[in-house]
Image 1 (cartoon, rainbow, N blue to C red):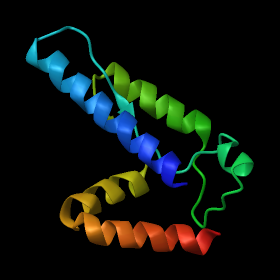
Image 2 (cartoon, rainbow, N blue to C red):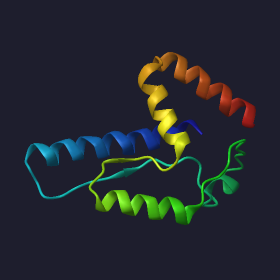
Image 3 (cartoon, helix red, strand yellow):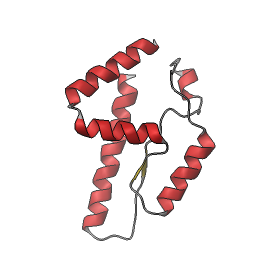
Image 4 (cartoon, one colour):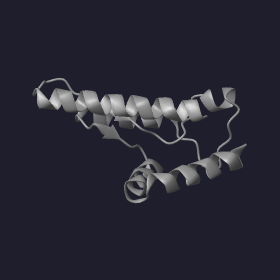
Length: 109
């Protein structure tokens, strides 16, 4: 799971860098980064990962993502959980976030 989360962080930061570059050169191109809660894609079943939270509906996540993308929103957070997580990550130090994340993942196994 460490590789999974690291790759998601990489894609987010890469997207953010491209978004900033496009804004800097005043390009007409937009970029969006969809950051949903766990979504029912089948990935977690194959990875043998269990969640204690509700799994988001793929169609609802996709519809929400497309709607926000068409409005040129960069960070797209469908649902309250992703919004709350993003807010908490802004105010809680990374070291503590890391411990919380590790303990959550540990309980799932």
